[in-house]
Image (cartoon, rainbow, N blue to C red; front, side, top):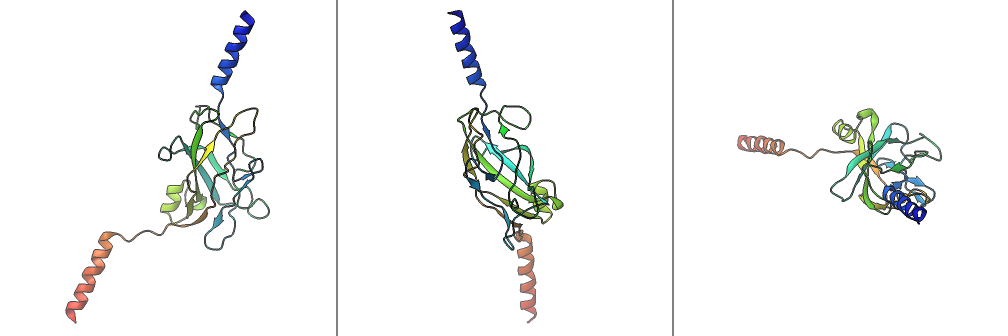
Length: 186
């Protein structure tokens, strides 16, 4: 009887400690996810010089960066346009850069893509005029051993381009004032 109780306690403890995981790649064979990221200007696939930061949260409004930056492994050839090839699964165990989520939990994910020569984050690259883009926010149901890591099956294609800033109100007022002055002289 003691052995059965100890075994039941062990199984319950292991079950409670099970951590959800997913494969951080837009090229995932088990889930058939193959969504290349491209340049908006000519549709060429991204390679060296670009990185991806995955943001994860329990809701669409609570996304936070997780893990390290993911790179595009090659600049030409078959793997071009795909990030995270060969990267270990992201295990959400509550340590380091990973919040804790259990197996079976549904998390929301967004991929931020940016040109690394223009900045080491999405925001820095965007501010410097670099090519940037974001995927649509999608959900992933986390898996756990003995199953393979969940894939990013809901990820959408991203075509990166520089962000064109909107004209400021002050600039528009200034243009209006100049136009009025020119009109009054005529």
